[in-house]
Length: 205
Image (tube, rainbow, N blue to C red):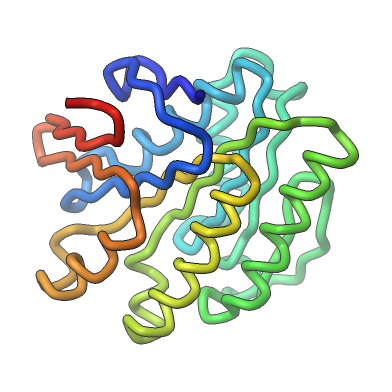
């Protein structure tokens, strides 16, 4: 079982669970996602963050601010932004780069490398994965392509016994798109402008 921590009303979910956080701009979705990962990281779990919106530098800074011992945490960031902005990059132990948010094959490969490394080389059996955000993927690719990619990603998270916390901008997409995406997830968290949460998680009433 994975404990989600105070930000998620101390709910727990089974391994393999994928959760979608949806809300309007500036509602705190990204911070909520990071709190969900940090709760695990502070307990010795691995964290993999796929960022299609912010550079890995910013993600690392924001995430480490939530950690008790940032230098000891097992963190992997798949950065889809920095190369896309034309800056030169080189993979490190904490950051792997893909060419852009369109490169979903690359995202999948780099994500799998981190998860495999955490399991086999670092012996970390519990990992949390974040995708920030689906909305950026949808800006660059059509719904069908994103759906197929996310179907593979959520399946890999499930197979790895990890959990996934994924973010989408609720006001950026029509109802049909949102309903299509929701099929991929086991649980839903809606957050409004006042940062009020509505939790629909498996195993909770």
